[in-house]
Length: 334
Image: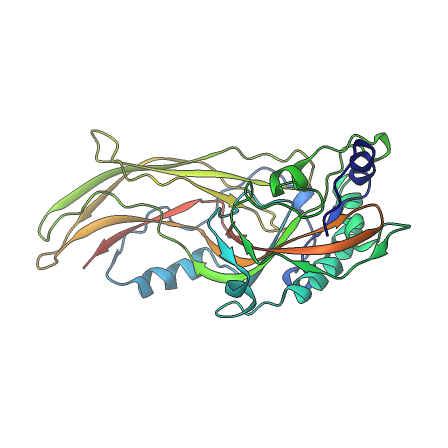
């Protein structure tokens, strides 16, 4: 049942809202998200010299250079949130099979782990506590699960009428909680590794030579609350040496809650490829160094008498923890 908020109610809610941190089963190692140093280069190639004939070959090398985990989590409202519709049935059954009540429990347990980690700084520490420490004076209602997600702007919380952007990213004006935000978080399971992010033209038949100029820019990476809502946008850029090829595919990403590396821009590099005789086609294929995870955005909501945990189906792109490169470019033939 929705209770229309008054101005006074809204002021009280700003002091009460809390949401999740990451699931304990999703966390390994120290929670270092709030203590990042400068990004540093890794040893994986930006554009491997080999020519790849199958997706299996690509995925095998990506698993060595940019490993991803079966389960992952992100603090705050994920930057890499996919705005496409996700139904509850897509998450609670099928390939994912992740129960929303279990996700809520995982998130509350992990919020405590995150808050108690000495590497977690304020105000992220106190924000996380507001998930697993109930609001004094309010009854705990049953968990709520949204039947579907239709975009962070389209989804509306039933009690507040706010969308996820408004709910999770609102500023806290209480001087005793300066800098804190309603701690929303995402927990999910692996559903798509190393997605293709564009393609360099239509390719070339066997016996020819291809020359490309490639680079990747990383932008919009920021966190208003230290340790919270960190991510940005990746834009792979492809050219034929004369002009840009209109096959760029910008996409947003999030860092996992315990990531210790940060992405770097890729400098412009020349890549040459000779398509072997007898092959139908050769092309350059950019792959994101991360994966899509399907699960839930979890948060705590309240009205004047009750509080409850809410799980919203969602799909998020999460950057691999073990590389600072946003894209790997593969020479492909068939």
